[in-house]
Length: 223
Length: 223
DNA sequence: CTGGAACGGAATGCCTTGTTCCGTTGACAG
DNA sequence: CTGTCAACGGAACAAGGCATTCCGTTCCAG
Image (cartoon, rainbow over all chains, first blue to last red; front, top):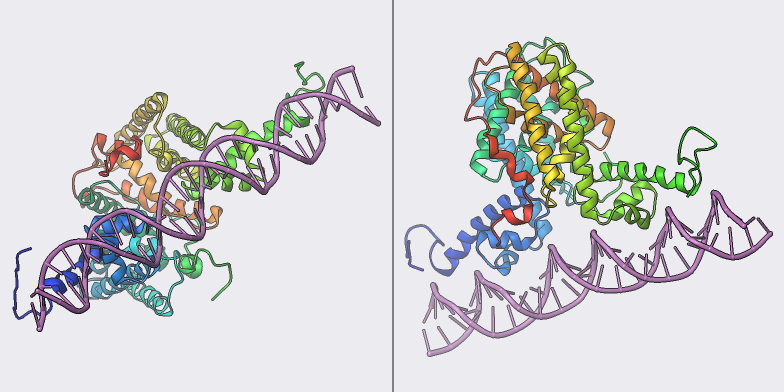
C-alpha cells in the first residue's frame, strides 16, 4: 500500500494506525448498508461488505448488539439534525419538504426504526427519541401555520409516512432513491391538497408508535 | 368410503373428517397471519397460532416451501379477482379507489410480494403475475381516461404504492387497517391532484419490479 | 531487525428450525 | 362395548446459521 499522506499535518492518517482509523468509517458505512438492506444480516456480511476480516470489526465494537445500537443512535442524531435544519428554510412548508426529502434520501428513518427494538435502548436514546418528536412537531406545526399543509395531519403521521417511503426498495440504491422521491412527491401533493375529503379514521395518537422503542423480547408495560 | 352427507345438506362437517377439513382453513388462516407479520417465521409458529400440532400441518403440506407457494399464489389470485371486480364500478376512478382499498385492507399485496422470491415460482404463477399486470393496467388506464388521475402515473406505480401502504404496521391488526386507509387517503389525494409540480425522475419501468419474482438465491453476488 | 498493534479467517459452541417419528386419541363399524 | 385406524400432538433429530473467540501472519515504528 503506497503512502498518501506520510507525516503530513493531519494526525493519524498514515501507516497502520491511519489504516485502522480509516477502517472505522469503512466498517460503519458497510454496516449501515448491510443492516439497511436486512436488519437481521449476520456480522460476517458486514465484514465482507467492508472488505475486512471479522476481527477488524470486533476490535472496534464489543458485540453485534453494540454495533446496532451505535448505528441506530447515529441515525437518530442525524434525524434530529435534519429536523433542526428545517427551521432554516424560509417557509414552514419548505422546511417540511426539505426535512422529508433529506430523511428519505439518507434512509435515516429505516435505519433508526427498523433497528430499534432489536436491543434494549439506552436512556440517552430514549431522551433523543423524545427530543426528535418535539422537533418534528415543530416542523409540522410551522408548516401547518403556513396554511399549505392540510390541517388534519398530525405529527405522528410523519413517522408513518417516512416508513411507507422506506418500503420502496430496489436492488439499485440510486434508483431506489429516485423512486422514493417520486412517491414522496405524490405524498406531498396529497398533504398539500385542501382537506376536501377528510382523512378517514382517527389519526395516530401520541404513544401509538412507542412500542418500536421497547425491546421486542421484553414484555408489556412501561411508561 | 360412503359419503356422509346422507343425513344433512352440508358435506364432511362432522366427526374426525369434518374436524380435519375445518383445520385446513384454520391452518391456512394462521399461516397467512404469521407469515404476513414475519415472512421468515418458523413453521412451529404457524402451528402454534393455529392451535394444532406440527404434524397436522405436515399432513396437508409437503413442506414449508409448498405452503408458502400456496399462500403466495392464493394472494395473487385474490389480487387478480379484485382487479377484475374494479370494472364493476361506475367510473374508472371509483374502480381504482375500490381496487386499492380492497387490496390494502386484505393485505394481499404484502402476502404475495414479500413471499415471492423465497421459492422458485411455478410457471402458472408467472402466468398469473403477467395477467395481474394486464388487469391492473386496465384499471389504471380507465381511471386516467376519466381525467381524475394525474397523467404522469403509470401502472408500475400501483405496485410500489401498495407496498408503501403495506409498510404501515402496528401490533393491532384493526388499527393497522385504519391507519393504512388513512395513508391511502393521502396517496389518493396526491394521485388525484392536478400534476402541478410534476413527479421527479423517470417513472418505474416495465421490468423494473420483475426481480421480486426471481428466486432470491440466484440474484445476488455471492456466486 | 524486532516488538507488537492490527488483521484475516478458521474453529468453536450455541441456538434455531425443517422434518420425521412414535405413542395417543377418539369416531365409527361391527 | 371393543378393535381399528385416520388424524394428531409434540419430542427427537439433523442440518445449518451465526456470534464470538483464537491463533498465526503482516507489516509499520523505532
